[in-house]
Image (cartoon, rainbow, N blue to C red):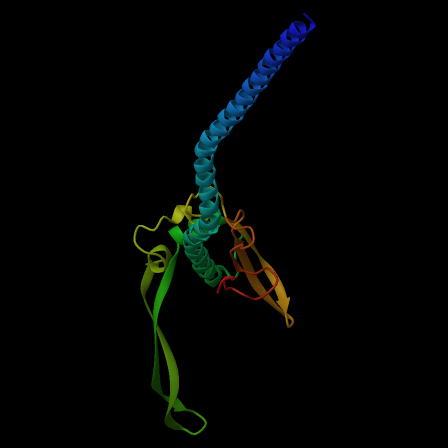
Length: 226
């Protein structure tokens, strides 16, 4: 009887142990399946995200390389027109000084001068003139400069091309919204009063490279790029 009881309990223990092992195996399989599922999902996520990251990084690197190139190209484009305009301002100022003995700091005065005033065209000829020398009491010759007035020509037509937009002379190209800073005055150099002027871009595209023509401290009419 006791032997039968022991055999029965032994069988029950085996059955319980087998059930326990089976549960462990099931849990193990579920854990492995979960890990595999997470791994597969991560792989799918990586396959989606990684190309996007590579694309974004490529765009960033391209922009990093192209940005200074585009900036330099745009700077050269803008500065080409600004330099031409500054040279035109200098031409107008020199004509103004020839007539008035000074430069002007007023674009309205400068533009009106160019539009309304004219250059006098003259012809200079060296020649010999015969005259009577009262000291030596004889006819002699002397060199003489003859100046003949031929006419006048508009300063606008003389300095600039046909249909030049003179009214925009004071504005910074290409937008023509800001006006150049224009200064004029007199400085003393070697005890001589020298008229000077300066024109500059008030808001340069490249703050490290401000375009200026003329100077308020030196007798210099060149641009700072020349």
